[in-house]
Length: 125
Image (cartoon, rainbow, N blue to C red; front, side, top):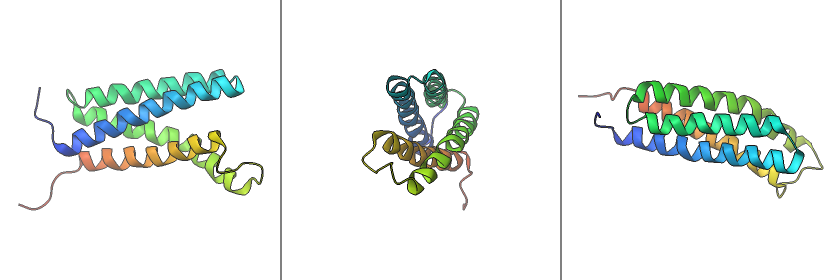
């Protein structure tokens, strides 16, 4: 096992947290709305992110690329939802579904940028 930099460890930790949040969101969507699609997509994406977090310690480049791609896919789902929530008078900031959607957007951005940072080469010398 290769030595992993601190930035890889941070990116792996964020991917693991985001994966857990994705699984939680999928279960929430299934319990509250009966959405099997939410359950499968949330748990599937969450499992991929958790595997990426673990994979960072074996194949960090592959793991960070896959984590970034999973984040982009989840952002593609949740950014429009969050934007609509700002326009929808019926959804409030206290609505748990809206809160989970906003957390998914923030988490996705954090994982995307931390993965990119972990993959970047250090400059200077």
